[in-house]
Length: 200
Image (tube, rainbow, N blue to C red):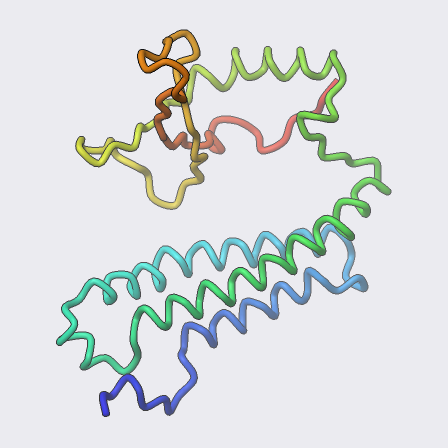
């Protein structure tokens, strides 16, 4: 019997996810003041981000090892990665539920509203368009994802937005077939712009 099939200990990374879940539980507790709950959400997310950059990345590297080498490991990397994903998705479902049903209503009770594009008035829509064109467009640059070409430098520990693009002015040469889409990532300029703006 190979060593990684002899499960004697609880995996330390799965154990760490249980620890981070305790932080999430503080954010879920309605007895905790609203602002403190939001801070616990931020701590939970920051912890998880670092966990993925370091621990999950390490497991992914181990998963690339030759089959013979992986047999010497105490645990199968693919199995651990699957359990990590399953656990994180479960936690995220709870986070999303509590944010929608408790945090957002709590903010609204304090006259703080997070508005999406559907809820904008005409005045707010014009404001957002002008803000985007004057403040955001000049400092963002899409990095196109193409396996055949070398990628530009992607900054570590920075938030990116995944986007799908097509040229609306370019007509398809293949009749009614769909347009050719390109995929890219855009770094969100959190260091240059505030995370929230007040709408008129």
